[in-house]
Length: 288
Image 1 (spheres, rainbow, N blue to C red):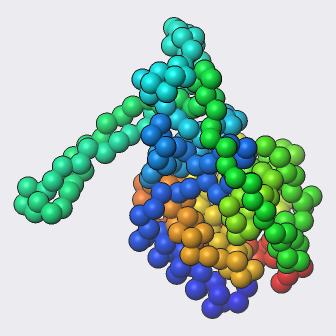
Image 2 (tube, rainbow, N blue to C red):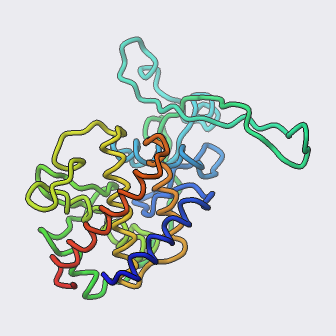
């Protein structure tokens, strides 16, 4: 990739990272799916959105709605009593709601004075619950350059409601293309997972891929920053980067950056590794 393109993409990512207020959104919907949704039908925001989407994918939930026990009962879909029995496997997810008050010195402003923590349960666990059905949509096929990227190292498998790279099988899996909101979302997610695949021990051998890690720890979070940075660089190279996707990348980066004690050098290092991964992928695809 040309130096000016790399620096331009870095600056765009930094701007989206620093200025963005929108929560991260999951870019695909399978079946009745969507991003994490509250019992009132509104999307979760901030870190709650990213956290619930991640946990939902890890647990293979098909529903994107989340309820407190009281909300599930009110919706006529109570949670089974077995969930609350002593010794039962943990099924809830703890999320938070900020406590906001008016600023005493400036009543036109508000400030956060604390957080209220509460437990929510996925709609899959609520008896009789079914997510509202979404309208079908058609997403065009990727062009030759994008297809070349997705086709390297065994290509991409499609199916299910998760996007992930499995190092042991050296395989990338994505939801079906028409599950995504736009072609840019599909390609961005595919490039993200291909970036993870570039870290395999027989390629760039990044620690976040080669060594077993605990979900959410420092190594895991750093690898997520690398992969999302690489995906943004690749989308820019393909001419598919959009403002909406860039904002979503910034939100995704912030969600993982917060787990790294907000060390600016970590983000810059991850972006540099992301550039290396993107260039490696372009060479493998015959595009550089």
